[in-house]
Length: 248
Image (cartoon, rainbow, N blue to C red; front, side, top):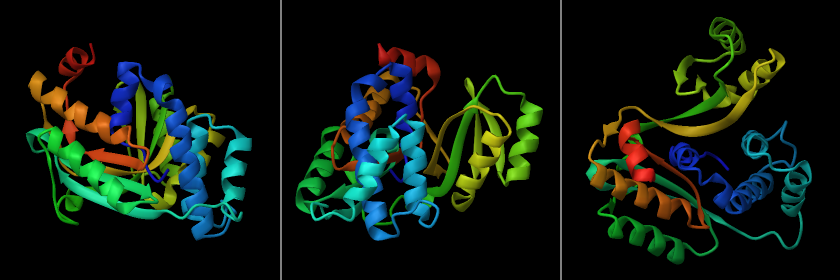
């Protein structure tokens, strides 16, 4: 998919990743097929397809499954999907962007609007929150790596920034440099946990109230579980102590 959501990190902390694996693979395959259909079926010649394949591999999607998704783009059974983006505000005033691939615009719009409404949020017009985010490549590297060596290797490969993020290092790149930086890190012997093109918030909204945090998580959860939704981005920041209470 074009980008994974910030909520993915919450799912890992809640231990729910296994439960959504099958659904995730379906979304990854859909993005691969659409990317291959819109451009060349060769990841080296198609930046969007390359990003989709990188995301799929990061989630341990098999090579056969990836190749089937690419081949499906040229088959007669390839479905037609519309790319949709929805923007709005969730509980506590957090900004939310939803990216979807759908074969039924009315259904998807109704489902997304319902998720916002039920969870004290509201949809806005196109562009209403997009200005709060910027597209970046984000690579997570195993936290056991030597920081100085990682910084040198990442800088040489074209990375923009490196910071420690819990048990991992977070390497930020320009979107178009994601593939090159990942390759450089792999050649340097670093263990890559994930690599994705994503929307990074310019500022964050801290949600330190447990009840409000639950509402935010419910909204993210419902959006993520929608089959048409490919990615969800938000600028909330829930402290670990609150997240642990919400996750129980």
